[in-house]
Length: 216
Image 1 (cartoon, rainbow, N blue to C red):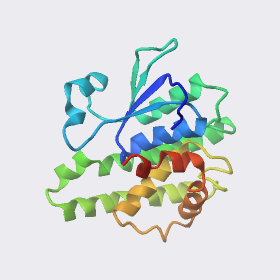
Image 2 (cartoon, rainbow, N blue to C red):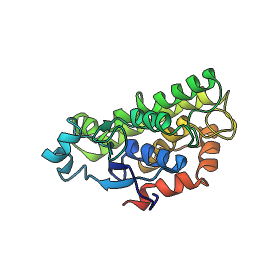
Image 3 (cartoon, helix red, strand yellow):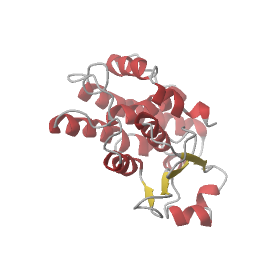
Image 4 (cartoon, helix red, strand yellow):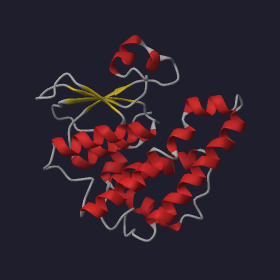
């Protein structure tokens, strides 16, 4: 996170996949921001103050502190990242290449953000099972299923990264899901493409500077 003056405040939780995506986007684009933690397990996310920022009580939430959009709160990680992309056209892009490249990157991102990660959210797992073992089995199933689809979709077009040889929104979404896979003890041995991408990305400063361990 930059120490330069910021026009953004990001309300986030250290281990939230959605929060990590946005932190990584800020780091990749080298846009200064202020990180403001919101704890998801102690009731802070349901506080009156946070519900004013996001009626759903989720993170991340981006508060715009200055400029023409001052006073706005943005929710949903992909919407926030898209806003940063359009508001900072001179910053490194997360949507490189042609129109078809960008569409394929977006499709990979959606495999994670729409089809995989929501199914292993805290609230969903709690509704599925009241015991930790049942929740873990549920998370393992859906993480494995999502990564199988990502692997099959990415492999024909991957290079160093999820789509080609340039870091993109697809990688931003994949990396936190790999972290979740490791957390829930899902083996990645059957996903050589994902393992290759992970090894490449883990050397990037945007990955290292946004990693949950820095915010725990």
